[in-house]
Length: 111
Ligand code: 5GP
Ligand code: ZN
Image (cartoon, rainbow, N blue to C red; front, side, top):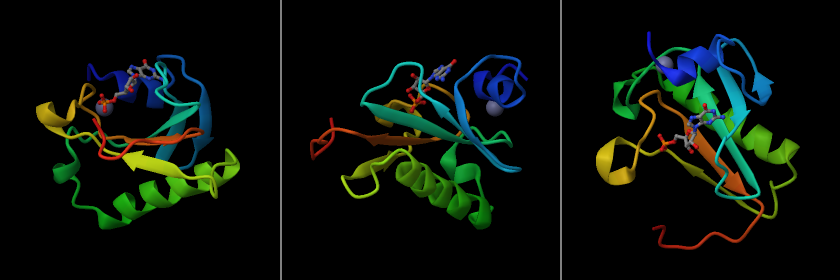
């Protein structure tokens, strides 16, 4: 499949992998929008968030994001999880992923 994140999962494209288990990986975003910008990516390919019926997997992705936040030292200073879905949200890679952002003050409402 011609999917950049599937290729990263399969080590066909290099990435800075900071986390891996049997279901998900965590990699540094190539174009970071904050001092800490990690992507939590399920190994299984889903294009859109609403296509995932597996609530255990969804829960695990959020749990892993919080564990990485702790490991990165931003658990108490604060962090933000973002899942962009479809055009209005600016989804640019059609393989579901959570953005973990931290290390600076975030604005609200988001842009
Ligand atoms: P989206 O726009 O779909 O919410 O997020 C896609 C994210 O993937 C962007 O933040 C972008 O910088 C990141 N990205 C795109 N291609 C690559 C890549 O090859 N490697 C890594 N590490 N990140 C990527
Ligand atoms: Zn994929």
